[in-house]
Amino acid sequence: MLKKLQAALRKALLSLPLISFVDADAEESCLLLWAGSDIDPGRYFVYDKATRHLDLLMSARPELEGRTLAAVKSTTYAATDGTSIPA
Image (cartoon, rainbow, N blue to C red):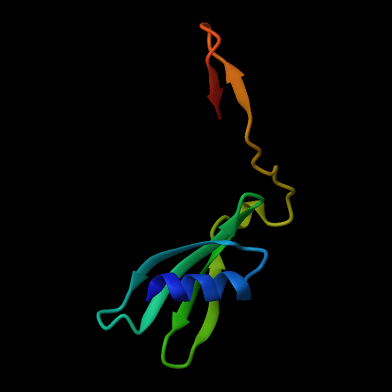
């Protein structure tokens, strides 16, 4: 169930493709989730399953608002024996 919801939220929050469910109420009718990306530290949202409504709760790192963050890039480097190590 959460995988399907996660996919739907990714479509709704295109600039925040990383979605993590943080907590829920006892009935799992209200969910607390975090959404972010490599260049955005993310935001916390509350999702109500009954109304299918998503409310912004707060920024995960307000001190970084308005700052340009570097994108994550993969790279490889050589170990002393020549083995290629992904990073």
